[in-house]
Every structure is written in structure tokens, then in C-alpha cells.
Image 1 (tube, rainbow, N blue to C red):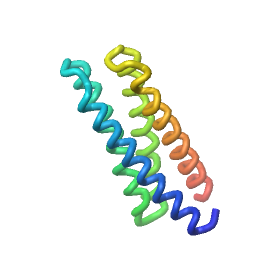
Image 2 (tube, helix red, strand yellow):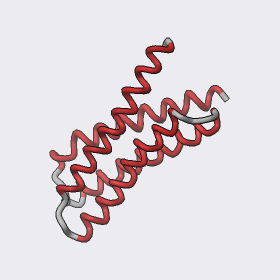
Image 3 (cartoon, rainbow, N blue to C red):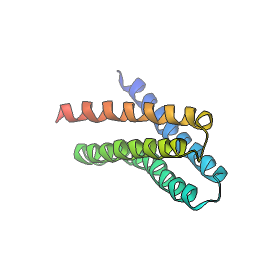
Length: 124
């Protein structure tokens, strides 16, 4: 991947994680006002926004070690977001059809982040 392609991908992925976080915010706003929905929703809100924030930090890292550490956090938070989406669906708080796109998006985000982390680790 040449330099301009890499920069383009990074910028696109940075926007993608932000867009996914915004989708989660809209989902959270639509959740029922029950205790369990709000608890799970807040957990999802925290992890999804953390993915976007930490990926921005990856892009601004001051060293390779800092970049790798932030990538690790991104993978963990994206995977956690998947968990909370699964819990919302499996508990019946949110219908499966309403979550399918978002679940698929976080599956892809985790996949990209894991590949980046593994590639980065191989360079050390």
C-alpha cells in the first residue's frame, strides 16, 4: 500500500469509527427507559465512543509503542461493543433486525483493528 493510499484508508477508517459511534448514540437515544436497557446502553455508548476516540489517538501517537497500545485498546473496546450489541439483541431489549447493520459494522471494525494490531506487532 503506497503512502497516499494508506493515508486515505486511515482517514476513511477514522470517519468510519466516528460514524459507528454516532449510530450507537442514536440507538441509545431510542432505547426503552427501563433500568436494564439504560445500563446496557450506557456500557455500549462508552465502549463505542472509546473506539472512535482511541483510533484518533492511534493516528496521533508519538511512538510505535504508544500506537500499538492504543490499537490494543481499540480492539478491546470494539469487541466489547459487539458484546453489548449481542446482549441488547439476545435479551430482547432491541429487535435483531434493528441491530443487524450495527453488529456487522462492529464485526468489520474489530477485524480491521485486529489486522492492524497484528501487522504492527510483526514490525517490532
